[in-house]
Image 1 (cartoon, rainbow, N blue to C red):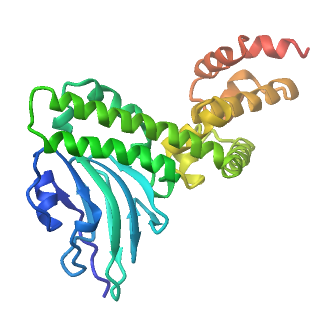
Image 2 (image 1 turned 90 degrees about the vertical axis):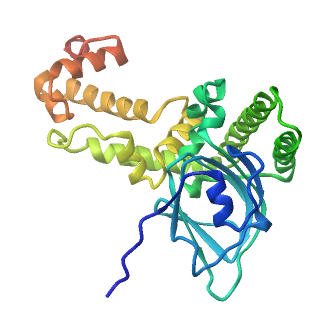
Length: 307
């Protein structure tokens, strides 16, 4: 009989994380920089999967361990940077015969630490917190040095006597780290253009196949559906497409829809209501509104140009 999978263990506080990982008490209850080499692992005791109530940013190199995030498994032998927002689930599996070896750092900070600050308002804009683990950021040696320096400054600041300036200074360092990470991700999209263009080609094929059939019973494809079919996260796909084409995933879906609509309007005798229905619209008015927004013509005006 198969062993039932245990639910994720929820780690509510940074102090709880420290205790579970055999670390001393954190010097600050809401923020901590952890040296990965000091983290204790016990394959017989460690949870199968985790969920943290706080943000986690890791730069690590790991041997003898695999990390699963969502349904994706990733090997960290090469050393990468990855991000987790509160309440996301991940799991770690170790080679039973070998002790995992980790190097690098782990930055943990609780949402309460950034509450009512500019970072609390902008952190949701950093889409890479919702990327899958297989979409982690690979860093050059120079890029690692930049981020290592920022994290070292954070560590020094909360090691010093905490005063009225400490929180703002640390938050400023975190914002700088996130902005550099945003830049490095854009660099990764550029240096992996071949991979990016393959995804773009697959997207084109996927949408062509989808709209080649009567989709009245299915409706328009959602961004999440497209991302799942391409085996990437929705946010990663959006970021990639914006860099390669300047358009969002939703815009690509709508562009393909308009392309098919133009084809039907110019080559068939279907009514506008029938075309709207075949393209997944419950109401012809919604179709006409989108068509005019994209083309500056109504469907009827576009059709008249071919008569």
